[in-house]
Amino acid sequence: MLPNPTLDQLQVFLTVAETGSFSAASRVLNRAQSVISYTIANLEAQLEMPLFERSGARQPKLTAAGKAMLEDARRLMTDLQVMRARVKSLKDGLEAEVSVAISVMVPSSATVEVLREFQEKFPSVALNLAVGELGMVMDSVLSGKATIGIGGAVLKQDDSIHMEKIGHSFMLPVASRDHPLARIDRPLTLGDVREEVQLVVTDASGLTTGRDFNVLSYKTWRLSDISTKHALIRGGLGWGGLPASIIRDDLANGTLVHLDLQAYEQGEYPIYAMRRLANPPGPATAWIIGAFEARLSRCPTHADFKAFLNEIRSPEIPLAAE
Image 1: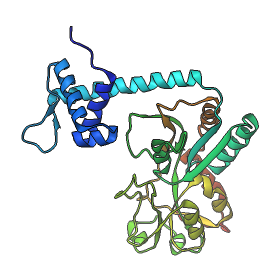
Image 2: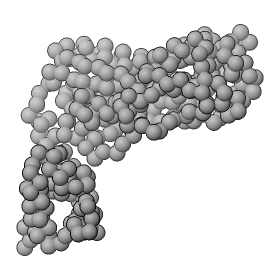
Image 3: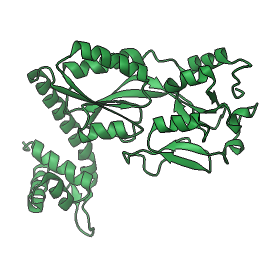
Image 4: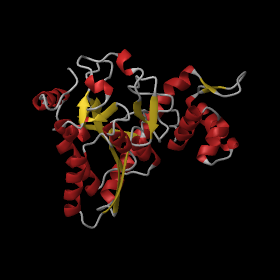
């Protein structure tokens, strides 16, 4: 009977495969490179098959058997994290502190409602709250800065993260009522917006480096946060997409105008609650997730919002043609 690989051997194997070299794995695991090599050699001996090709290459490459083993090793390590998380949740009581990262795409009214009720239910639990754009939420969870994240930008698949859909949101292209684009009484084309300044939020997390979303103009102003973008669009300094949840009043009173621009992707996208598998939710954290889900699952759909736009249209509050 073949001896079973140890969890330590599987962890070393995964680290070598993911970092691409024995030396990089030794740095990540804080072990001597000779120990890494010895562990892999023992694992290969136990399995009676080579996992890495070492000859003729500067870096070890997975063999066909190694590639097949990789998914099994990941699954076993993920199952171990789940087991450890379950034990931790049984041992731990009420958290002393909860750190939450929330996307700007989450309606601020929902956030206020949840946190007001949280304060009443868990007065002894301290709260750290961070609100940001794009990859910030997932980056905060991955780095351990946040216990949980509430957001929609899933920019990197990671087996150590548990994700659960709890609602949806969408962006709308808008401009101030005095902006040139708002005065065009027909559906807008790419040619209409190419030469107009588009305001774009830059992702501080770095997870979206080299990727732009719905950037259609040749002229762009890059901003650090959504609130500044909102203020500048209201001031007529450019056009851009804003979360529907934060511009409802602006659209109702005519400060902003919805632009009928087919080239701008306006589909709904999911909002997730995310946490590390190794960091199970305590009572307060689990309550926050459930409270956000109860509110965000009832968010208006894109069709509901379009009906709202049709209701507020009037000669006194002109909207771009739809």
